[in-house]
Image (cartoon, rainbow, N blue to C red; front, side, top):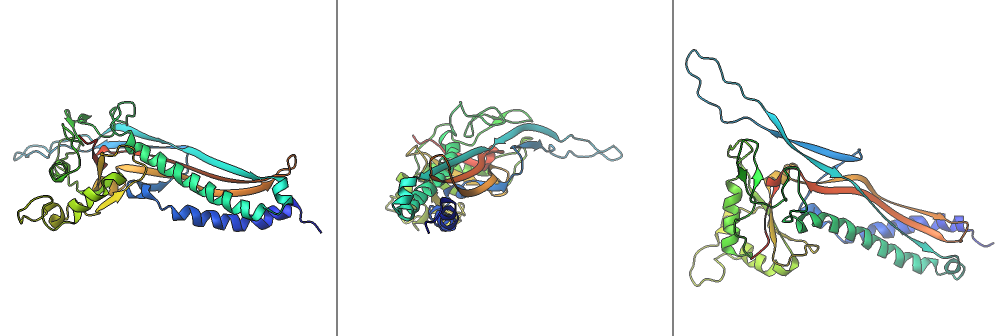
Length: 305
């Protein structure tokens, strides 16, 4: 007796789901090296930056204690995107017993497409980090020299004059990260976490991060970047960065879940069903997520020279 399309769909789906999962997982998760991930159960997420207190003043003997107000600053909003793609196995392919080989090839291709879209969406946050057309809750781009502070003035998460990745620029970036303040001008303990680079800078990063002695010198000075361990997470290559000489450093603010963030609204799901009018069997993948930033102190960057 010939197998029906409904039966075929039911029998094919578990195998294709398993194949999809294995292929999807093979691509890794480069975005997780940059973003702190959380789950969401709403249409969008909003996070409000709370401005703390100023420095505590001296209290004169017999005088009352001073009061200060913690206020709200800007709001960061994460709008979830729905990402979906499908393919169909035709009735003729099913009749000619091609559904097994075609289904496997199509499923692998679908998994690659879904994985690529998620990585590209996440990387777009960094690819647009210097653009005035892509602003955050504080009204300026993610990487900027003029992030407004609630207590007055501005602060920066890039050098005034950006440079290519080298010993001097990397050491200067680490110094800048260590001098960041909160919105009331108080010193905060922000530390570099991980160097994020495009594939074109992997050899430069390897020399800077792993050489025992200073790179490109004839003396015997130690490589302070390596010996101090100030970039505790090492470096990570992101293949979706579009600027070949830009580099970024994530910080402990992102590690704590307050800097660069991603929200998973709906986990990856797949489904399969027969279609009466065409005789095709359709297979679909769908996912919802968003990427962005709440606190710009979660990253430092340079576009290169």
